[in-house]
Length: 379
Figure 1 (cartoon, helix red, strand yellow):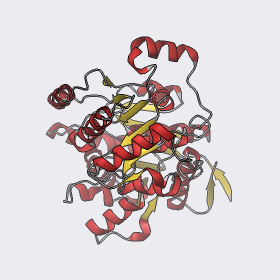
Figure 2 (cartoon, one colour; figure 1 turned 60 degrees about the horizontal axis):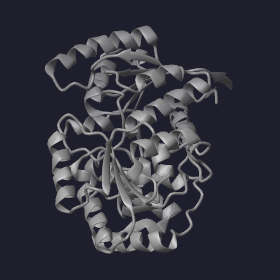
Figure 3 (cartoon, helix red, strand yellow; figure 1 turned 180 degrees about the vertical axis):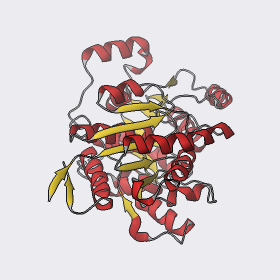
Figure 4 (tube, one colour; figure 1 turned 30 degrees about the horizontal axis):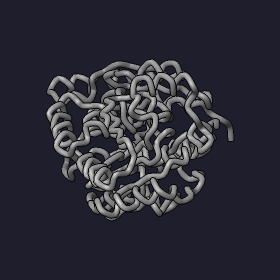
């Protein structure tokens, strides 16, 4: 067997923020480090400079825009695949997956790259979403998501699904990590109210599905117990979510928590914020496919209070079962937080299961299995 370098094109709507986007960058960086060629097609965004700095090539195309003009990218992608001749095309979102699939199918079979999709979340079950099952191999991010695919699309061959948990770089995310003094000085200068109180942090895009109202309710209960804390809601407000942010601000005002909760907006230094937190909360009412922030917090040695379902439960069961809270049980979450504030949290298992290296090497193994078994992809 001989080693072979490969070319991989990843396709997604944009590179602004989020777990899908971060995973795309991580796979790209890993491929480059192994000597392979990494190309990402997206509409661009704030993460593009990092992608390029880490050795990937970015090709800008608004391939995730929900408008008729997006169909023009079908012949464009067909031409691109003929020019680049990638070994793998990896899709991560439904509309780009349709464009890629139609371009891919229009090529003669011998010219087609291998097609991989990652199922990141529970889409509505319909023909539009079913495109994510049309690839030659499906990667999914938790056992919950594997069960969801097989239940929603019973015609899918279970043999073509591989569960690969999202992972974090444990050389950066570990219990010994501490933010540097200059960051701490700048942070406490901007947010002096966070310096002398235990920080309770909720991280995620502002969305009614994320359970932010429950977080506010928990903090309201803690305040009535005269406990010391400061709450942080860290996440960007999408263009269609301005009204929702205003709703949250009104709720905070009504609960008389104006001095006790800070909405920071988008932050690129979430690792540091988690590292100085006393606890991190994950309270989505709908089961999440994975929950990257949970992995990051536990890897940093920061305890997590989370509703016990979906991919988040899978993580907690393995690393920190004491953080499991019955879905919607605000009283249980409040009591657990109170106990940790008073006595300190239980011990967190070291993270050897949800690591970046494991995620990337297992993804490369999927590529390997799709390609000619007569050669070995360099690692």
